[in-house]
Length: 268
Image (cartoon, rainbow, N blue to C red):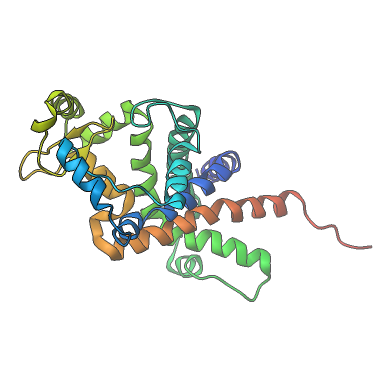
């Protein structure tokens, strides 16, 4: 079983690794986007104009956050309708996220320690046995520390790419995506002056809806699980570090594969 999982882990990583690095690093770049935007000066004129129209004012993203979002969600291939439309980039991101879940699960099986001594070795990075061993230990050890956070990211990520996946995720979280979409459509059909006064949330199709009182909508739960918002600033920091680790793991995996397939020939 371990050998089979290791092969799946290795070959999926080789195929999807570069995409994983891009998605993880760009995800790390937007973990603190709310905090960064909160420090930006507000455009009071735009706020007043939005209020007069009955709209909700949305502060523009800084350039690097905007680019990072487009990388993370679409690999820069933004669909014509960003909330609902599909593009090749959006499809690839969703597929890679599903593949990432398989990579992480097969990695757990491949390196699960058989005893306490092995566990201690798995949780230690050795720096005195050469660079190759350092890279191997870093790959395994950092992967163990970050795997739970990375699984939360990878298992929720496809919700923003595939409608069928979003339906399943919301059902698991106790919600009904059809009711939410209907609520959003009704809200959009209201005249300008009769829009909901509550801060809106968006369903998977970018429509605004006001959640039932006392109940957090599943789309909000998905977002919190994906970004670390459910645990406050401390959890966001852990998500940020895990995303950095997630971006580095494919790079160390490529190095290990290259060394394995291109051994150094001993000199005569």
